[in-house]
Image (tube, rainbow, N blue to C red; front, side, top):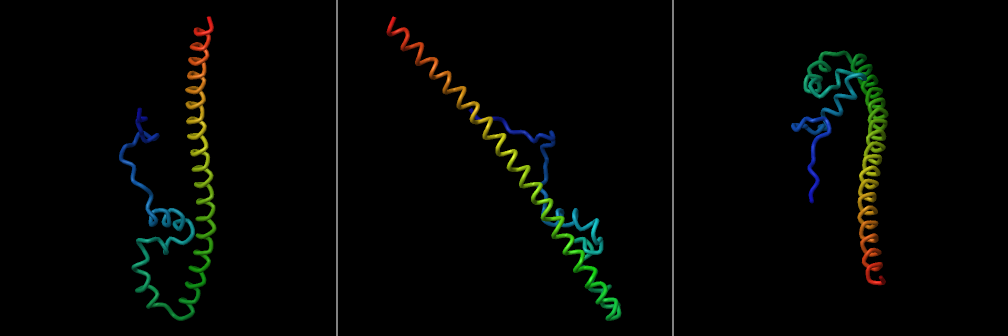
Length: 118
């Protein structure tokens, strides 16, 4: 019999996290100029800068992406640990059901054997 599925938050309209949303959720605290909504406008801003300003911006952005990679890796590790725990929990539940079913079958078999020997 299939098990009914339900979103644990109670929200049936769950939108999966997109790559852009994940990127923005991390980058917002590092360098807001690099949010996806701002990237298209950077060319115009950079075109008005002096070479020194552009170099400073490049260094700042390079540092921002290094920090982004660190935070992304940490978030990914957290998610992977959570997924591993969910998988383990689901498998333990399944094992418990199987063991319970097998014990019931064994008890039934023992009862049948007892009635034959009596």
